[in-house]
Image (cartoon, rainbow, N blue to C red; front, side):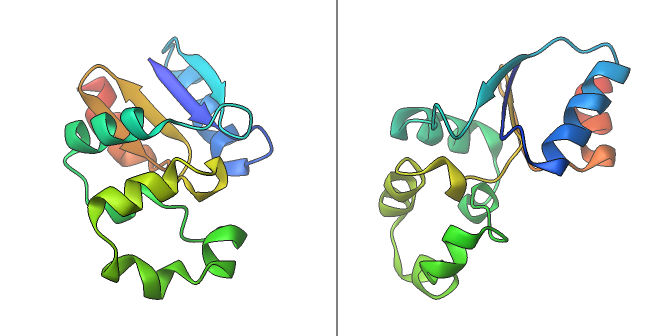
Amino acid sequence: MLLICYPKCTTCQKAKKWLESQGIAYTERNIAEENPTYAELKEWYKKSGLPLKRFFNTSGLLYKSMQLKDKLPEMSEEEQLKLLATDGMLVKRPLVVDGDNVLTGFKEAEWTEKMLS
């Protein structure tokens, strides 16, 4: 399992504590140092079944400063994926990739359902 996170992010810290409390092993990747590539994002988006907007860190400063709330609806999926690949701070975190299972953000109930059932 790959956990892509930002070490200073409190939500990422909660997610790591939860994984450890469940005894789930993971490999951690710092999103600020190693941003997901376009190819990775495209693959994970397809596997996730989630709307592409769920991959954006909509509460982040960069998202807001770029006024993406207004711009995303006008962009193609291809353009959105390429934009996500430009900066890890645009990507919703934590991001978990475990085989075909891809989760964005940390919602304990959702993680429990997807990882423990």
